[in-house]
Length: 193
Image 1 (cartoon, rainbow, N blue to C red):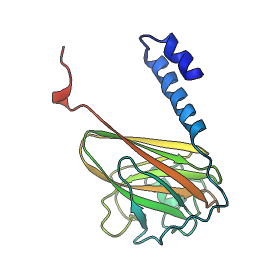
Image 2 (tube, rainbow, N blue to C red):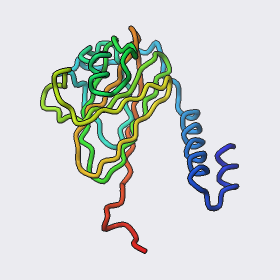
Image 3 (cartoon, rainbow, N blue to C red):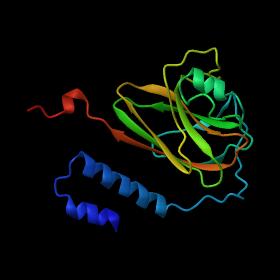
């Protein structure tokens, strides 16, 4: 209803109107998505070298942080500028690797209906291990919005990331991750005036 109203009222939307339209689409998508079952026994293989799997464009996965490892904590996140110090990340995390293509905007959406879980993306080439406090990483983005969360990463060159879902305090539970990729125009594809 809100989306239809916004679309009908905005023949040539400005940036603020476009943001309202995008937000309304996101709310409608969330409302249409089934809730996670907090009692579900999600089967996830044990992590290997801290990684529980590989993500790619178009994926929609269900997993859990239960049974994950606890390599990353508040100190790690604060040192890498992912989250502010004192955010309370002491629960196990579940980590996935993803090779993101060049000239691509990657949106990673996290649905957590049951526990307070956060989303983090670290620029790191996974070769059998994950970074610790002593490693240098190229960048880290974290988001700690409760319930539904997302990270948007724009890549102009191919880059590898580790995508982590981590709980605050002792929170561990099921989650859903959705990966959407959109093409970013290359300089030669842009219209010149």
